[in-house]
Image 1 (tube, helix red, strand yellow):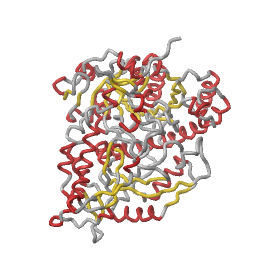
Image 2 (cartoon, one colour):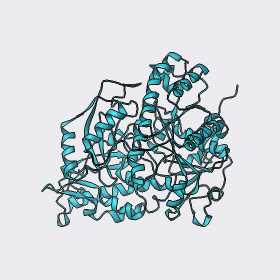
Image 3 (spheres, one colour):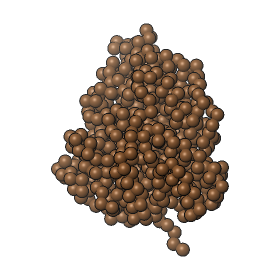
Image 4 (spheres, helix red, strand yellow):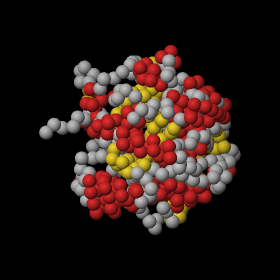
Length: 559
């Protein structure tokens, strides 16, 4: 019995096309491309056409509450794009860039899997076109300018270093850097103070890059970054340090979307990389609009479960960009439903209709939530060999009670050939015209009301509790004039609640807001729930231990 090849083996055996051939499929001239070798290119922003965007369709791929390994949103997004092209639709997939934290940690890369991948897989999962590095450098330039201002009294803004909210970032899981002391070693090394690092996808600079639609907006938003307070209690922003011009200069290329390809030679635009549990969880607005300029259908994804990525996609990204999604695909796996039905990790692949029936509550809640945004989601059952027809039939029958389709998706094993049924279901839903996209809350509501609506309507909570620190944060939000902004909840992805141990569809719980971060530049406030952290740690056995490169430069162990 032959074993199924690894993702890396499949990617390395693919016949990759020159990127100008992919651009030709979209109708983009090779003169407009900015080449990063033969297989990657950046696309200039001036090609975005708002009138064409209005004529084309946007499909979001989201998921139920995932197991630690994820349920295959990216694989489904890529496979759906292949399937749409196979049934005669001009389709492009638009995705986020992978972070090195998960690549070397536990979750792996974000280039899809099996025969539904984007390539060149190694480049995409590693340094790609340097966008993450640019975000990191812009973020840390501001950190250096802040500490330089504190050190140099002749030009001091009188910043109270105890109030500084800005952290340095790096794109790696490194728990040791969450809380640090900087400036030790004498007067030449700065003023000692407490600091810390976030992971790069959690940087407000990444959030700003994702939300900005041109260089001028990028520069303005960077200038609006809140730093802290002066000793006389006045707020200090990045613009007070005259930082926004230099920061934008570092991001001048990073703001341009990246063009690559799928295994089947269809266009893929990959740009921006915020996590959905601690940031917006969606690719850049400019990447989505670029795809919609040149394609009849754009398939995009929002990270983790629909309670995180999808809610933020609708309430933050689409609201700001004035985008109106046409359909939603909700990815589920039988193994995740077994998990939510009580299966332990070593039981995920053991058929159990009883556990699937119990675990359906989680899928049911996500369906109900997406209906609140005006969608009839198509459930994509990302197929595993251990799925049984009995379990699949149960899901199809239960979904039909909601007036929605559940379709088995076999993109991992079969590529586009295994995704034509899902593609046809998406087209049927788009052409039905029954989608009535709406946001969950109005921006004029108070921050507390917005949080309460999300907690009760989306998570299923009974209410919200605020720590003393969080209550002070609410007060500062009002003082800084940020009360009219949307909220970007930082919450565990492992549960609908803020307690990762509560699987399935939790009931009878209260959401706990520990503190706030203010993303004034990105245009939202961040309530941090429970034990959520913005700098992850590595697992006991990091994925990096299985990676290597030989004398000829051939990579192994990447997933």
